[in-house]
Every structure is written in C-alpha cells, then in structure tokens.
Image (cartoon, rainbow, N blue to C red; front, side, top):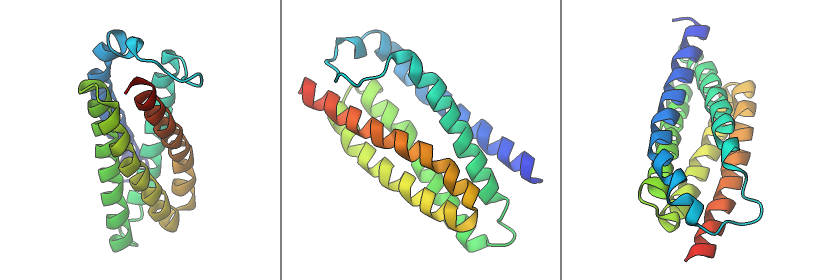
Length: 158
C-alpha cells in the first residue's frame, strides 16, 4: 500500500469515529447541553463540527505518515500507532461520557487521560516523522482547551 492510500485509510477511519462519536452528542446538544451553565469562553456550537473535522483529518494524515515508516522502524511505528489508537478510542469515549451519560465530572477525569495519550502520541510521532508530530499540536491545543472547558462546565453545574 502506498503512502497516500495509508493516509486516506486512516483519515477515513478518524472521520468515521468522529462521526459516530458525534451521533452520541446530537440529541444532548439540542436538549441537555443548552440547560447547562457555561463559562464565558464557551465557543458557539457551530464551531465544534468544523474544528473536529479538521483535527480528525490532521490526525489521520499524521498517523498515515507514521504508518508509512512501518517497513523501516517497525517497533517504534507499532508503539506509536498503538498509542494513537488508544487516544482515538479515548476521544470517542469522552463524547459518550460527557454527552451520552451527561456526566461532565466523569468526562473531566477521562479527558485528563485523553490529554496524556494525545501528548504521548505527539512525542512518539515526532520521533518518527517531524511533520506527523507537528500535525498533532493543534489537536493537543484543542484538547487542552476542551479540558478547561469541561472542568469549568462541571464546576459551574455541580
């Protein structure tokens, strides 16, 4: 499989996971989420879909670039992609915990773990392909913001 095919496979996978995670959020965004007290820095709802779409695309490109190194750095690449898969699963789990279970406290605890895995993915990817590492920085920044937002929502609504 060539590099472009690997990138496309992972981009589609990331977007599909994001889509299914988004399905969990849809009903809560219209019913439960508007009832919450939110901090002044809470972005408008319309911003989340384009931001997450771009982040999923960047994640997929990064992972595809790393996957392309499998033949040359099998052990490092396998480790990096395993950590990537864990963070992607944690990403989807957060949506379920926050919106599906409507539990900002549990989601707040989980997002710390997500942040750690996103950071570790960045570290591992950067060792294999600098561009892949750089592609993870906006995601790391967004999850940092989301963590502050999540904790703030929990605090304001406890």
